[in-house]
Image 1 (tube, rainbow, N blue to C red):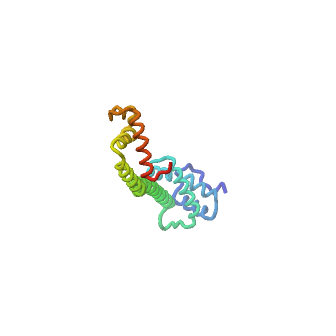
Image 2 (cartoon, rainbow, N blue to C red; image 1 turned 90 degrees about the vertical axis):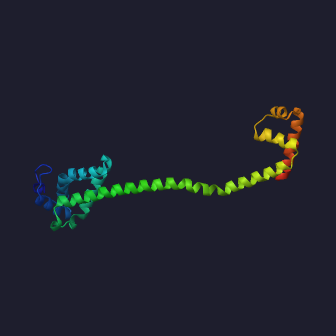
Image 3 (cartoon, helix red, strand yellow; image 1 turned 135 degrees about the vertical axis):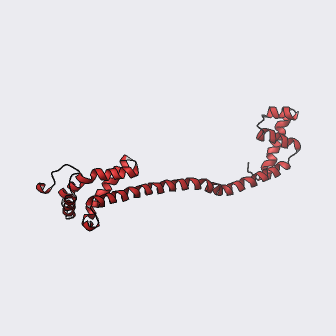
Length: 196
């Protein structure tokens, strides 16, 4: 079998020689296929690299091309063109398919990224409504407190004052603020239906 392989360096086998090697490869001759590979590996990789602009992906595509050539060798029609053109057409098609696949994946990722924020507010609507209703209940219950109770609660729980600061702001003794705050919180608890 070694005598049948071309002894010329890569890239020098004529069209007839490649056609003969591919014909033998289509019958399962691995050595003939290796001859096709030696002749066309460089041009296939070059075609893929020009389309993909990525060395690693070009290598992957080149491997895929030669797997396809091995599997489809029997389908090669010499009347449609030379072996080199046939193989390079496969390489170009595979490389373009890879670019399209990568672009489609990037587009899907971008679409998901754009749609997630739009879906989030819809998911938060029940929570926002519940929060608003709860605020209204608290406002209504605060309205039932005495003025001093309401101010003591507002200053200490909403404005962040300490009880001592609230007493100074309201110009009442600290014990008065503590008492009004305690009474106000009890009334709020009862109004809101919170169990102690």
